[in-house]
Image 1 (cartoon, rainbow, N blue to C red):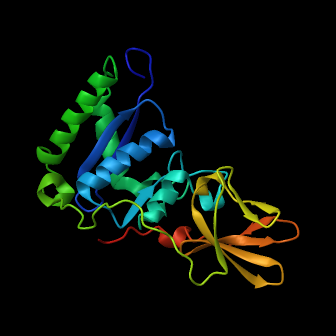
Image 2: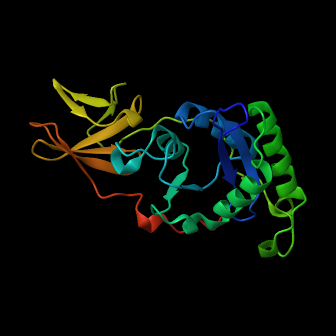
Length: 242
């Protein structure tokens, strides 16, 4: 809580290899629309990562969608970014980032600033010090700024998603449905506006896929969707080496 009694939610992004603090943005809410803006700016300035590791909270995950996906994580998938989630209650799986949070809390939030503008100035000062003035023992006493290298994967926006090996491609409605004739199948609003592919795998049983990921199966008679095996489970937890 800031001195003016408003809550501040810092959105932080770090590089796993160098510990470089890419972003520390003071936000008024955890709503996805604000996170989109921060991540898009980071991708334009620093390039696209191979993967992003997060906890299971908003806006990175959703409890009501397939495999905990959110609109933000669906966007990451569209950009070719892998999703790596830590197990709930295991912050040590993102230990480097959490260690930075501890230092950030001590040095940039106690005491809190009067308002968002002043709090952002404190975050900016902390980021400059953390990246270029604070040596890290785990980095052989070098600064993160000495080791960090911008990603070679440029951010160019979203390309088209095609499904040449599926029976058809369908655009998910804004209410999160796919329409097959008169049948309306509830999918999830996190896929609103996205194209999915469907394939009839047996009589009146259809497989729904998003990009290369199988989401689930539905019966044409009932329209009820059953989830496929989770492609974002524990097997993706080890951090990408690059």
